[in-house]
Each structure stands twice: as C-alpha cells, then as structure tokens.
Length: 363
Image (cartoon, rainbow, N blue to C red; front, side):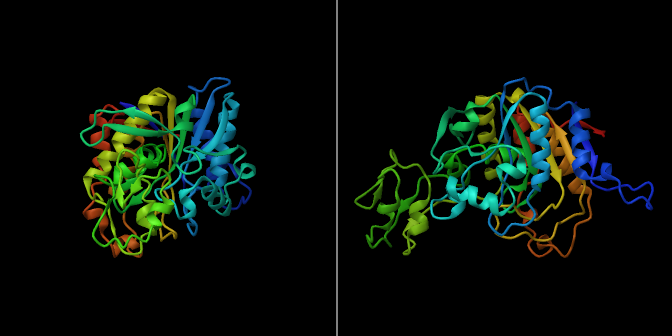
C-alpha cells in the first residue's frame, strides 16, 4: 500500500473576519505538504536534481503557476540539491515549441524564468530534441526508448505535474510527464506513430522536405529509415500532403507512454523520483493546446508521492467521482468516452512502475 499525501485547495477559513491568513495559500500548503511528507528526503547534498514541469504552449493560461515551481525548487535546495527546471522539445521542427530556443521563449511568456522559479531553466533534449540516450526496453510496442540526455545524467527527478485530461491518452498526469516529457523527439514520434514517415505519390519533388531534414535522410525523394530521426519536419513543410504518417489512437498511445516511462526509470532509477500532482485548473485538454478551456471540475488540491502509479490513480479516482462542468469543452466533445484514462495505470502496474493500491494521508 503506497502513501499518497494530499493537501486541499480550499481555503477552509476558520475566521472569516481575519483577512491576513497566509497559511491558507496553496503555496504555503504545498510547503507544509513537502515538509511533512518527507518525499524529498531521498535527495542528498550535492545531487543534481531535475525539476520536471511543462511550460505549456503560447496562448495557454492554466499551466502551473511559477510560484509553485519556485517553492518546490526552494525545498530541493534545502535538501542540498542542485536544482534546475526542465522540459523537452515538442514533436516537429517548425513551431517554437519544437526547439529549445522556442521552448524558452514560450516559457518566458508564460511566466517561467530563472528569476521566477529561482533556478536555471534547461531544455533536456538539446536544441532540436535529438540529444538522447538510447535504452532498450522489452515492451509489447517499443523495443527502444530515447531518454532526453540531460534527464539521463541527473541524480534525481522531481515531477511537478498539472493533472488534466488529454484527447488521446485520456489523462495527463505524472506518468505522461515522465513518459512523454522526459524523452527526446524519436520517442515522442514512437509513442504517437507505428512506422516511419513515407513519401507518397502526391510528391512533386519541390525539395522542401530535403531542405528541412536534419540528417539528410531524404534521397531521391525516398526516406532512408537508417538515417531518419522521426522528427516530422518533412510532414510540416509539405504542401502537397505527400508525407504519410500512421498516427495511433486509443489505448495503444497510453501503453506506449508507459513503455517510454519505463525507459526513463531504467536509466535514472525508479527510486530517484518524486511526484507532485496539482489537481487544479483541470482542463479538458493538455497544456500543448494554444488555449485553455474552462476546468472540468472544481479545484481539488495537491497530491504527492514517491510512487508514480499511485499518485495518478488517486487523482483519477477523485476525477471519476466528481461532478463535471457542463460548460467545459468536455461536455461538447466526449473524448473521454473513447479514450481509456485507466490504461496508463493498468499497464504501468503490469510493468512494475508502481502500485495502484494507495492510502491518502491528508496534510
């Protein structure tokens, strides 16, 4: 039975006539939660610690507030850890979110700077998302995972996750923060697609795909799979719809995310992780969208655990019991009915990444 620590987002005002009550701030509650749960006690003096979060896309307004990230960074420093805040690039090459430089520009726009989070910000998979360590896994879908190189080099990882829904994986919690957020571009492709991109008969040989390919993998308008890094840059620049990609839907995406998370665990060590899920502003889509819809439920609070499966399962159980906001996007697009939110939990437990059995300890 794994321990999941929880603090309520509600203020629970005892004296409504007393306006100055800083202990009611969720930032203060987060600090108390970290202190009393001891979830950062595995960090030793001098450890290099990655504080993994998601900066969102340009236009997103409900990502985690930088004050939460700052507080976690401060608590890591108290343990003697050398902390940096990190994220990886997105799939593709043309949009800002697809390069380290663009990620940093978006982070700054959304309020994440080295000053606001009180730590350096480093993009973990390099300028274009091709800095990785290759790890063999024996999954039913994937045999290799490409872990972001900077993640592979750290002593510990603390995941600060905005728990929300997801139009393909059902939910985005700590499992997704590791399985998607800690891998480089080739694995981001592999968890979304079954095979390499292919050039079809629509090709007019304009050469745009050849120009953008970072590894010169396109020769005579055929893709050399031995060179292709699966970045999808060719697909982005093709105006003739001449690049075919076999996108995956349903439960298989969730299982591939879990297999990527296993690859990350195999490199860093499952024992070197801590997880903090913020179940606030629970949007019906991930923060990769260039907007933020109304939350699907009222704010719940913050969950923390050393077990990745338990912390996501506890949030899912709360979500399953909650009354949904019928004015949110979820009411019009019932994608949760054709995704499988519990698939990550079930497969993650099957692969030994954690336990779905937990007990809540309120702080």
